Length: 335
Image 1: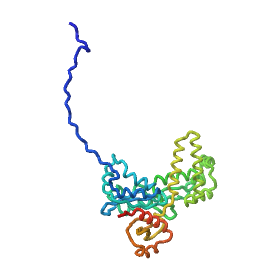
Image 2: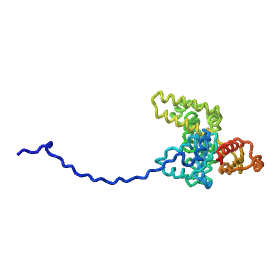
Image 3: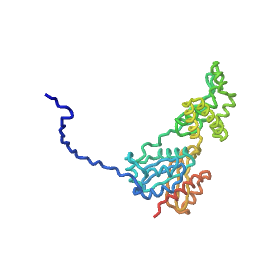
Image 4: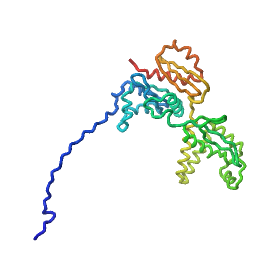
């Protein structure tokens, strides 16, 4: 009997069940039709660092954030938020925005933190932001070794700072010690310590301490010399194929530049101050408490109604409040 071959066997066509297709809800993405008035304000923002906040129709602050580039960062909220449902829900509530220009990203980070310490809007996840304030302390020599730089979270007399961001500040300290090795300026006990000091070209204790002091005071020439030396060390590491070391030095350079950025909103003054600015019918004010700019308001006002408050604002704060008032006037919604 002939056995059937695979080619001679007809495969029965089984009926396939047609499954109903579930119609998944599609998320409506933010477009220019969402918060059109606030969207129009974006083009009026400068391409500089700063702090921004969104308001609801009731005037309630929804969110406070910071930006390296205000126009670019705020404009991104009207982009594709397909995978960010929480932001989509927030943007549906936004009717206006406000912003304060800052002279550096570090200053913007500080102002954001100060505002969030005072009050956390509903759509901000963390009170005070993610970075923590720290100081740099010069610890005295001990055990034969020279002085050391240490990052601390509680300030004492003589500490330098504050700086925002513990990790960045520790990298900056590593950058300083890589070039100005304070730890090798003491009465070194072992031969290996003395040899390491020689290899690293460590000079006299007073000379190294003076160089470190000038860096911590932010003297431009000292910062420039330090950065140039770090760039040379990074190049030498890359040339010898020590790419991990080169990357580490690059991180230290970036951290040094972070702490060197100017900022006026934390630690610039003690006590209590009220700052006022006015431009084209808009009055902005800031409260300084315990050395922190921590409250920011903006409202319509005539120049006559705020003349005395403007006159009471210290002259050194005029650039800060005048820039804030000018931007507030530019962003003022038109009827």
